[in-house]
Image (cartoon, rainbow, N blue to C red; front, side):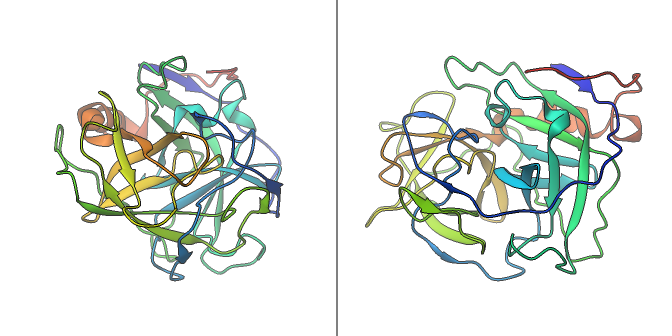
Length: 270
């Protein structure tokens, strides 16, 4: 496990803006091109009160889920060679163009915890971001529960994935949160170490910029979006299975004061 701590930032996180990008390649769903959910429909305003928008200089580049008042679960591939200390976390957003949504809360990243991430194989693509303070859970936010250690999902299980972004190649990011119904695939189209989904009829799925967003099945965060083959939306989509890491996640969340007592230090690339 890697535990890194970040010097507090003095500037306030900036708000979201609208970008134009496109889908590309079987690679981690980070911010090189910031496309998002392909297909789907507009989500309800309070349908995903745990969803996080990770941003740099006000620009959305990845998703995440609030699983503890001070921790957001996302993908390690979201940061690549970037410094997590340069990111901000926006909770309670629905329309990324609106700067004054009543439910919106902005945070800096105080520390990160990752678990043997393998960027060459896109394995163990999981990251815990520690916020600079606790989220206010009375302001329209809530936590996303996690499955037990080693819990399994049967093929054919219906799930949902949500995010901001394009509905196809070379389109603008959606300003409104969108949601897509997906189905867990059999093991054949997937691979060991991942959980996979697809849209059984029609086209839809995850793409660049949607990395880190949670796969929600039966009300639990069963997956973290990792990568998708090209072209986006034709599946299967690959997720990191959260249940394989539940014991490790609990060990991080249950540390005193929400994290190890360690001096702050600047953070470089993962």
